[in-house]
Length: 148
Image (cartoon, rainbow, N blue to C red; front, side, top):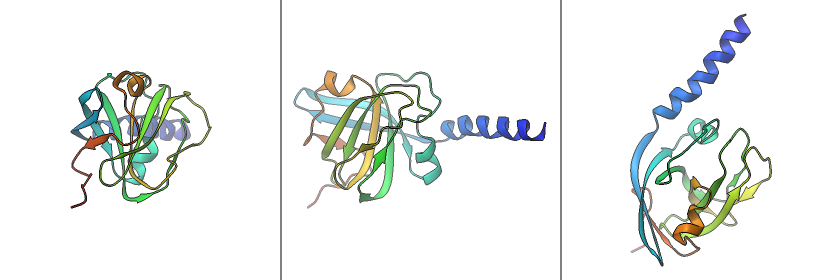
């Protein structure tokens, strides 16, 4: 019984943690225009590990921003993630380094950034194609700093 209570606590603690993430504006400028998102920022190791796990839905103008604090190569997978997602890997200056589209829910396939990045933005699958997000596009958020 004690184990079951602990498991229930950990399960619901994960949902409570998600509710405490910082929510901020983020925009992406592409050849099609500038698009605004409401982004939850996962900045700690625990927040990044939880990410969008166990969520069943996400609004099309919503995003999860994974802030790594420093630029480095990163790798994602979709364990315990029920949504199909697009991933946008972003350099320190806010330039899109690469994208991965339609990541398969609950897959353990590794999705690499391809180069050192400061952040990854996860959005609902199809968003990258719909908005024309591509390498070289610009992301605006408080964590990105343009050179010069």
